[in-house]
Amino acid sequence: MIEKIANDVSDKLNATPSNDFDGMVELEAHLEKLKSLLHLEKDGAMIVGISGPAGIGKTTIVRALYNQLSSNFPLRYFMENVRGIYRRIDCDLHGLKLHLQEQLLSKILNQDGMKIFHSDVVYERLQNQKVLIILDDVDHLEQLDTLARDVSWFGHGSGIIVTTEDQEILRQHGIKSTYHVNLPSNEEALGIFSRYVFRKRTPANGFKYFSERVVELCGNLPLGLRVVGSSLRGKNEDEWDVVVHRLETSLARDIERVLRVGYDSLHENDQILFLYIAIFFNYKDTDHVKTMLSSTHVDERHGLKTLVNKSLKDISSKGKVCTSCYNKWVDRRYIDKSLGNVKS
Image (tube, rainbow, N blue to C red; front, side, top):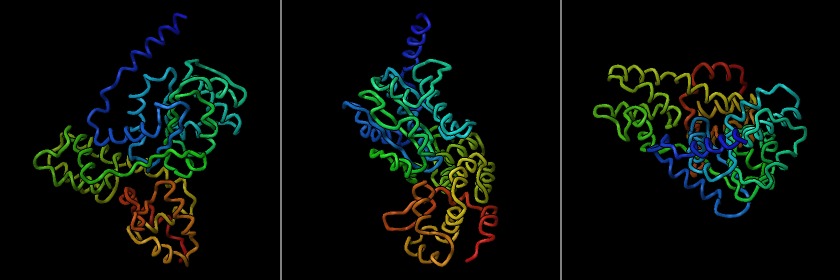
């Protein structure tokens, strides 16, 4: 009993609002949108899905939201990197599902080493509880079915938030309240970059051109702006010139590793289609792309849909397809390797 009281007091102390996210560009707009989707003022539980390409800031957004809302929920858990947990478990499908549920319940109920033996335990333990659960980086429908099969699993006022790169997973699960995170505008991206480099919203004197060039080379991707911006902090103009020149020919390893995850998960034909578009048809009309690729063995219609669902491609309101933040990642290594044996 003493241990439970101590843990409860500690949780309440740790629930003090953090300043970690103060001043982050456009973050508040994302948070307000998500709060409106959650309908926290109403009865019942809500499941909300957040989609967007790797590195765009989905985890940062939901972490800030969790920080704001968690003190209002007696039970809460931020389950990060669901994709990674899923891949690390070495057992059959049934055992894998039980392991995921054990981790969820152990953390949210603060009972270490909890063991369960059937998949209805989550419903039995949480159906009358008001919970806040973040399922971050989901990449398989089975993960969602295992951890949040239905809103009836959770008590009134509960909020379940799912982040994923794959919009199709959200549709298949029946999640109707969704939010797609788009790339920031040029002005917003410059503000994000400036905060990491100069700790203010605008570039320092003499660095505006360099800053705008870096933002362009990073494709406005927040991950790239953070990685490159942090590496440039305190450096002089000559050092900036070296970094900009390097970015014009290759990406930072930390950025490339994140961007490759979504690409590597694709079927080989979809990988080839991705590269075709990135190299030859970026910002071209969708109908033109389909026509040009119709004589190849690539299934361009199904493939385009897959790439859009997985946030690897965007189709603009004018019907043009683009690879957006992935442009700089496509370099000669992957072009030569992936397209070398393609028969047109």
